[in-house]
Length: 422
Image (cartoon, rainbow, N blue to C red; front, side):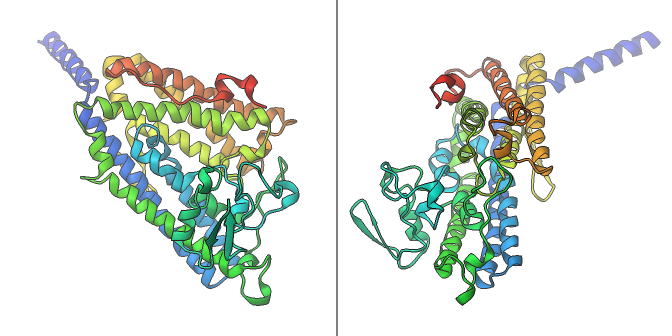
């Protein structure tokens, strides 16, 4: 009898183990994916509204305190948004929209004054290189006269990527970042942009002229960011286009979107264009949040976003958790070893990103880490790149385990053909 009970317990344990690794349905995994997307964009919207409120306070009552509050609100707004970038590459609706809110790098002379000794006074490829909307109520770009007497959302939307020049970034997070920090003129030395709050002051206290128009631009960009995030958040609600597209058919297109987003962000975009390229060139102009010196956080939260999607778990800005059936569960049911391997590699890339955050908190930011003579800093950044490249190899392997094929990830010359970079 005792032996029979032991056999019964063993059988029960076997059954429970089988249940624990039973593959979830594709639609269950995709529901979690869409729920995390909605939560991430909703958090991005919430923090963008807080930024909007802080900008309104700065413009209506300029001071060092309101200026600092606006910069803090911008930094906070980046935390949830960066975790949504994993949804970009696999979902056309996101990729087509993303340039409005997170395009970079930008030719900031389109927006406001610049230090021309460093920036230059013209660019043959960009007629709007130093158009300076803030200073000029009438703009002449490529033979066209543009009425910029009133700076509002409609004007800056019309200027975004004008002349089909992608670096003419007039809207989104990085336009706002430039208006709050100004140019970072420190190269690979310590220091971020040093714009003064008096660039928004009234009357004789105004520095660098046109403070009222600068405030109008900042407010228009902040209002437009909120509007754009409201739209994207709605696409992931029940009945929204993004959610409906992901949930179509047998689930294969949706699973393809998940894996494509993970692999393309991991390899070509984050490891390559946003990290390795700057390291190869030792060029601070290649860093993502270049005005605020916030690149360490942007990279860390991008890596965390990839992990979120695979594990089917996202921690919201209020501390609550959205979680459910995951791609990890699906892979584990087919190949437990591969799932364990990818989990470990995702954790390693997040940890490598955290190492850059720790260096920044100690005073050494991304632009300093990539400096030519900083071997130790270069190694920290390279470890992050290596971790991302390594996890992408395992992301490629899960394709067969979940029954999808024909997936291609974004590449980058900085990884695929580094000798071409100069």
